[in-house]
Amino acid sequence: MIEKDKRAEYTRELWRRWSDARKEWEDHAREDIDFYLGNQFSASEADELESRNQSNIPLDRIYSAIEQFKAIITSKPPKFSATPREDSDSDLANVWKTLLEYVWNISDGNEVFKQTIHDYAVTGLGYFYAYVDREADYGRGEVKFTYVDPFRVVVDPNARSRYFDDATGMMLSTIFTKFQLLDFPKGTHDDTIDAFWLSTQYARGNKKAGKAKKVKNNKNEWETPKKTYNWITGSRI
Image (tube, rainbow, N blue to C red; front, side, top):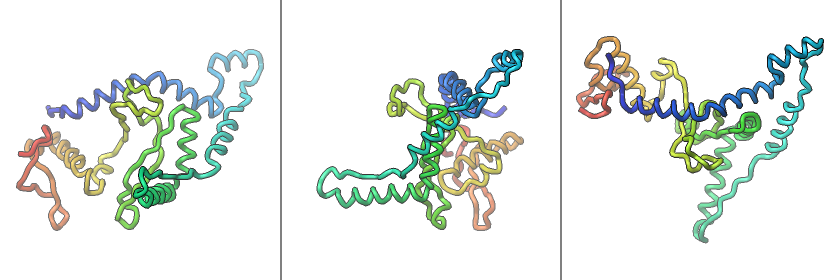
């Protein structure tokens, strides 16, 4: 039997507790999405209307109201400003202002903003997500942002700020296939790729897989290095 990583078990348990705490919001949010899309009658209400020979066609005013709200809020792109704390910071503040405008432009900020406003108007929550696009700028990388589905995010239920400023943490769920994990670029994801590969090898009966870290040689082939790691405990051997 494969020994389970205590860190993975802790993360899974934390995700379960935080996800259960927001269960009521999730149920209401999904009902709100159905209502926004025109499904505004329950099954019993639809049956009651049918028994009276009445159609269950809703007089939908929500869809147009939300679209109008999005159009008003996103009619103009935001104006960025950076205020210097002292006179010597004025030039640096101008640099930060330019950087923020640049990140907004390369991230297609107007469209991302519309989707975030849409999520907020329908479900009550909208998230921006900042990340590093390693393939942008001819492989040199760029800082960008996008939106994420609010159902993918769970927050510490003890947070009281409406912006979750006082939350001890936030978790973002992402589902990957095995091939997506193996295709991750080199860098911060290497440990995840190695741990995934070693766990599959261990499951196939390779008992030494738990004490080997894979690296690539000049021929781009996997080999076992002299320095090894125990990926079950996370310590170097």
